[in-house]
Image (cartoon, rainbow, N blue to C red; front, side, top):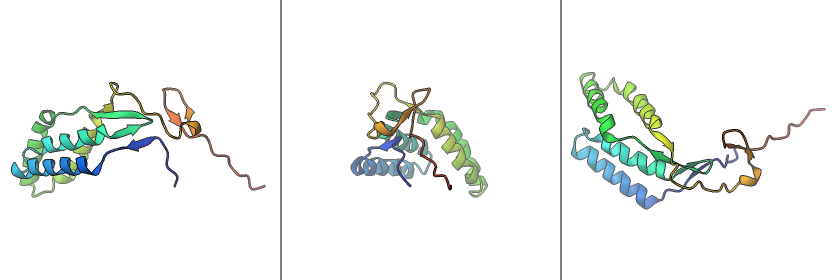
Length: 136
Protein backbone atom coordinates (compact mmCIF):
# COMPACT_ATOMS: atom_id res chain seq x y z
CA UNK A 1 0.00 0.00 0.00
CA UNK A 2 1.30 3.46 -0.90
CA UNK A 3 2.05 6.14 1.68
CA UNK A 4 -0.68 8.74 2.10
CA UNK A 5 1.80 11.60 2.48
CA UNK A 6 -0.54 13.23 5.01
CA UNK A 7 1.19 12.00 8.15
CA UNK A 8 4.77 12.58 9.23
CA UNK A 9 6.84 11.63 12.25
CA UNK A 10 10.35 12.97 12.87
CA UNK A 11 11.27 11.60 16.31
CA UNK A 12 14.70 10.13 16.89
CA UNK A 13 15.92 7.10 18.82
CA UNK A 14 17.95 8.98 21.45
CA UNK A 15 15.12 11.17 22.71
CA UNK A 16 12.68 8.24 22.43
CA UNK A 17 14.85 6.02 24.62
CA UNK A 18 15.55 8.82 27.11
CA UNK A 19 11.86 9.66 27.41
CA UNK A 20 10.97 5.99 27.77
CA UNK A 21 13.55 5.34 30.49
CA UNK A 22 12.39 8.37 32.47
CA UNK A 23 8.74 7.28 32.11
CA UNK A 24 9.55 3.76 33.35
CA UNK A 25 11.53 5.11 36.30
CA UNK A 26 8.67 7.42 37.30
CA UNK A 27 6.18 4.56 37.12
CA UNK A 28 8.30 1.89 38.83
CA UNK A 29 9.65 4.11 41.62
CA UNK A 30 6.11 5.17 42.59
CA UNK A 31 4.58 1.68 42.19
CA UNK A 32 2.37 2.96 39.38
CA UNK A 33 0.79 5.80 41.33
CA UNK A 34 2.51 8.50 39.27
CA UNK A 35 1.87 6.78 35.93
CA UNK A 36 -0.08 9.85 34.67
CA UNK A 37 3.15 11.87 34.80
CA UNK A 38 4.96 9.23 32.73
CA UNK A 39 2.04 9.06 30.28
CA UNK A 40 2.01 12.84 29.76
CA UNK A 41 5.80 12.84 29.27
CA UNK A 42 5.54 10.21 26.51
CA UNK A 43 2.50 11.79 24.84
CA UNK A 44 4.12 15.23 24.71
CA UNK A 45 7.16 13.68 23.01
CA UNK A 46 4.99 11.79 20.52
CA UNK A 47 2.88 14.84 19.65
CA UNK A 48 5.92 17.12 19.36
CA UNK A 49 7.27 14.91 16.57
CA UNK A 50 3.98 14.22 14.74
CA UNK A 51 2.40 16.10 11.83
CA UNK A 52 -0.92 15.73 10.01
CA UNK A 53 -1.14 17.46 6.63
CA UNK A 54 2.00 19.35 7.63
CA UNK A 55 0.42 20.73 10.80
CA UNK A 56 2.32 19.91 14.02
CA UNK A 57 0.50 18.32 16.94
CA UNK A 58 0.62 19.28 20.60
CA UNK A 59 -0.47 17.33 23.67
CA UNK A 60 -2.50 19.57 26.00
CA UNK A 61 -3.25 17.09 28.79
CA UNK A 62 -1.79 17.44 32.25
CA UNK A 63 -0.88 14.72 34.71
CA UNK A 64 -2.82 16.45 37.47
CA UNK A 65 -5.91 16.41 35.23
CA UNK A 66 -5.68 12.60 34.92
CA UNK A 67 -4.38 11.85 38.41
CA UNK A 68 -7.76 11.60 40.21
CA UNK A 69 -9.21 9.24 37.61
CA UNK A 70 -6.00 7.21 37.57
CA UNK A 71 -6.14 6.64 41.35
CA UNK A 72 -9.77 5.51 41.03
CA UNK A 73 -8.94 3.20 38.08
CA UNK A 74 -5.89 1.79 39.88
CA UNK A 75 -7.95 1.04 42.98
CA UNK A 76 -10.73 -0.62 40.95
CA UNK A 77 -8.14 -2.66 39.05
CA UNK A 78 -6.59 -3.90 42.29
CA UNK A 79 -9.88 -4.90 43.95
CA UNK A 80 -11.12 -6.65 40.78
CA UNK A 81 -7.80 -8.48 40.39
CA UNK A 82 -7.05 -6.72 37.11
CA UNK A 83 -10.41 -7.22 35.41
CA UNK A 84 -11.13 -3.49 35.43
CA UNK A 85 -8.03 -2.94 33.27
CA UNK A 86 -10.18 -3.88 30.26
CA UNK A 87 -12.02 -0.57 30.80
CA UNK A 88 -8.95 1.49 31.75
CA UNK A 89 -7.15 1.05 28.41
CA UNK A 90 -9.93 2.55 26.25
CA UNK A 91 -10.49 5.36 28.76
CA UNK A 92 -6.81 6.32 28.67
CA UNK A 93 -6.83 6.19 24.85
CA UNK A 94 -9.90 8.45 24.82
CA UNK A 95 -8.26 10.89 27.26
CA UNK A 96 -5.09 11.03 25.13
CA UNK A 97 -7.02 11.84 21.95
CA UNK A 98 -9.21 14.43 23.71
CA UNK A 99 -6.02 16.24 24.73
CA UNK A 100 -4.21 16.14 21.38
CA UNK A 101 -4.59 19.18 19.13
CA UNK A 102 -2.86 21.07 16.35
CA UNK A 103 -0.05 23.37 17.54
CA UNK A 104 -0.97 26.72 16.03
CA UNK A 105 2.17 28.35 17.45
CA UNK A 106 4.44 26.34 15.12
CA UNK A 107 4.76 26.75 11.37
CA UNK A 108 3.24 23.94 9.29
CA UNK A 109 5.63 21.76 7.28
CA UNK A 110 5.50 21.76 3.51
CA UNK A 111 4.21 18.43 2.27
CA UNK A 112 6.82 16.69 0.17
CA UNK A 113 4.09 15.26 -2.01
CA UNK A 114 2.13 18.54 -2.30
CA UNK A 115 2.06 18.47 -6.10
CA UNK A 116 -0.11 15.36 -5.96
CA UNK A 117 -2.42 16.65 -3.22
CA UNK A 118 -5.77 18.33 -3.85
CA UNK A 119 -7.07 21.08 -1.56
CA UNK A 120 -10.51 20.58 -0.02
CA UNK A 121 -12.63 22.96 2.10
CA UNK A 122 -11.26 23.38 5.62
CA UNK A 123 -7.62 23.53 4.54
CA UNK A 124 -7.06 19.79 4.29
CA UNK A 125 -5.43 18.03 1.37
CA UNK A 126 -6.47 14.77 -0.23
CA UNK A 127 -4.72 12.69 -2.83
CA UNK A 128 -6.17 13.03 -6.34
CA UNK A 129 -8.78 10.53 -7.42
CA UNK A 130 -7.36 7.47 -9.11
CA UNK A 131 -8.69 6.69 -12.60
CA UNK A 132 -11.00 3.72 -12.70
CA UNK A 133 -10.37 1.12 -15.39
CA UNK A 134 -13.46 0.01 -17.21
CA UNK A 135 -13.82 -3.62 -18.17
CA UNK A 136 -15.11 -2.87 -21.69
